Image (cartoon, rainbow, N blue to C red):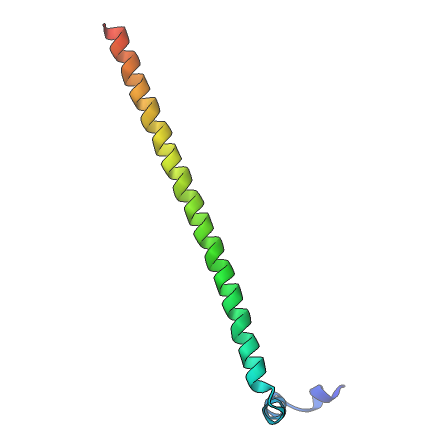
Length: 78
């Protein structure tokens, strides 16, 4: 069993505080969270933009097809 197994988490945090590394650890934790959060948010935004673009493209194609079929019916009626 190593030295970290013999001492508890509180002692480790106190040691980091004494060495001045606790603030560094907290800063890196927030930085890592910020990077992961922004990455996931960017991925979600990209997916949402892709879905909206595909939906608009689908509506545009649908409108063109419906107008085309109406024109065809008009030609057959004449």
